[in-house]
Structures are given as C-alpha cells and as structure tokens.
Image 1: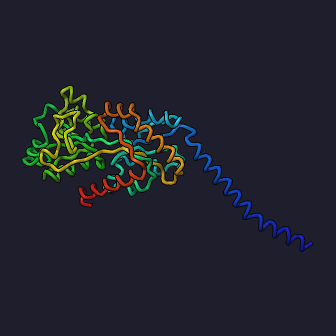
Image 2: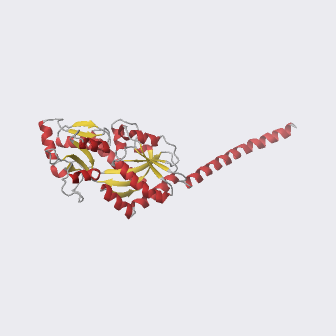
Image 3: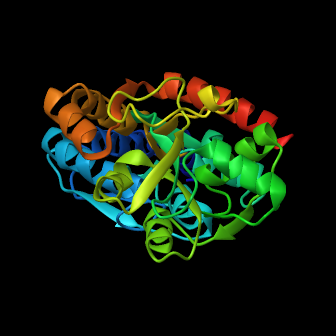
Length: 326
C-alpha cells in the first residue's frame, strides 16, 4: 500500500511541472493570439493639449485615416494641463493592450528637462513619427508698432521685460523663447496662459504682446489683418508665406522643427505596435492625407519608423539640453 502511494506521489510530482508549463504556454498563446487580433475595439489617442491647437488638429486628421487602416474607431481624447504631463502620464500608466496611445510633440522631452516629470520618450514604446512642422513663428498684433523680431529686440533692450510673451511653461514655445533670448541678449516677460488656443485668444484680446505658435493655426487672423507674423524659425523662408523673414536672416541663430509622434505604454506587445506602425506608414504615405495636412496646417507628412523616431528624438533632446545649459 505504501509502495503504491509513493508511486502515485512520484507521478503527480513529475506531472505537475508539465501541467504548469502547459498552462503557461496556453496563457502565453492566448495573449499572443489576442495581440495578433488587435485592434478589436475602439482605440483612444491621448492628446496632452486642449482642443483647437495644432496637436489636436493634427491628431484628428490622422485619426480619420487611421480608422480606415485599422478597422476600428480612433477616438481623440484631450487631456491638457501641466505642460502636457497629465496626458503623457495617463498613457504611461495605462494598460499595455494597445488601446491607449499617446500623440505628442517635443513637450514630452521638455517636461523631463525642466523637471516637471521624471520620465521621457525612453519610457514608452514608440509607434513612429508622422508629421514635421517648419512653421514655428512669433506672432503679434497687427496694431502693434513691431514689424519683425529686430523691432522686438530693440524695444526689449531699451526696456527689459516690457514686452509680454504668452506660452505654456514647459512647452515647445517656451524653449523657442529661451533660445531667442539667448541669441538676442534680451529678456521678455513670460506669461503662462496655457495651450495654443488660449494663446491665440490672449493675443486677440490684447492681453499679451507676442505668442509663439504654428503659422497655420493663425493664418486666418494674419489674412484678416488682426495678427502679424514677426518671424519664422525655419532654415529658409516658407514658400507658403514668403514675406515672413526667418530668425536667422534677422541675425538670430534660432531654428526649430516641431514633430508629432505616437507612443505606447512600455509593455505593449511588439505585434500590436508593428500593426499600428504599418497602418501609420500607409496613412502618412497616402497623398490624400498629405494634401489635407498641408492645406489645413501647412505641415509636412513625414513617416519615421519607431527606431528612426528614437534616434531623431535623441538628437533633438541633445539640442534642447544645449540650449537650456543642461
């Protein structure tokens, strides 16, 4: 009897690891199958900015085309505040099932460099870059006496901090201002009013002297005579608005490219990210999307793989550190 009991126990002991391994394999297989089927329900794209700004508008144009590629609704959710860190944190902490994706710009890098957060793009799994924007500009009221950035510099040297500049602390336009101040040797009065839409409203209401923004966002106000572009931070004049001088030709070595990319929670399965990346590539290479993005915001549809996006962001981060003296 004892001998039979020992044999049963031995067989059970030997079988247990095999059963456990089979269980693990079955669970792993189910997880792999589930990620391979992605997406099976609507996808949330978190935009760390309010509605009406360039990040929001770019994300919604892309979402319209991504829906056709992925076969599921792509829902843009605006989560503004704290320089965009509220939205980026939401994705960082989200379940890594591919259904919560970040759409952001240089603000993620700047939040870390400015000490607003303790994470950056390296803490996500990148999904690829989709848009480049060479229309970063400083814009003022058309009623003001300033024709371009040289007038701003002259006035600021005579009366430091007499000219107010609207931005959102920790944002890309904040970095633009820091770079201009260094290049021109002046100091403006920084006023944190919030995101792109709030800055435009502040300038319309004559509550501020200058805003940093994307030309395409305010082109209607420039055409109507309400706003005046003081300078664009590109390497050469933009053919879409050739009358606006670059900062460089006015004597300030300041040039920036804004970029927009997607990122997933770090533990998101590679198969999900690969499916999304393939869809994104198709969208960005779609002439209809490229034409709509150009017409709406004067931006350039530009696809980069996750690997190339990582290298690109790393180089941008190094440049920002240099400007900020980090």
